[in-house]
Image (cartoon, rainbow, N blue to C red; front, side):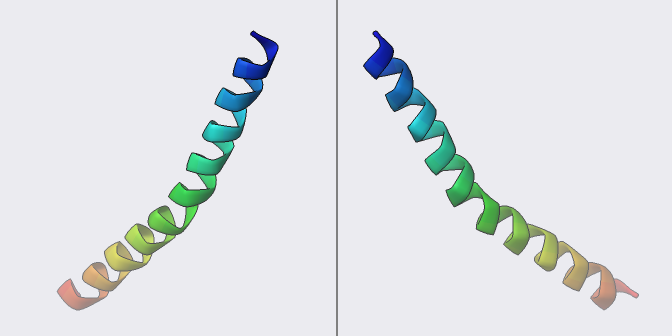
Length: 38
């Protein structure tokens, strides 16, 4: 069971790391759209 728990934790960390660049890209896209509308 302990090994499974560790696996889940590492998977969550990996998914978080993969999500970070996606969030940054989304934020930059939103800021660009706002600038265009202005």
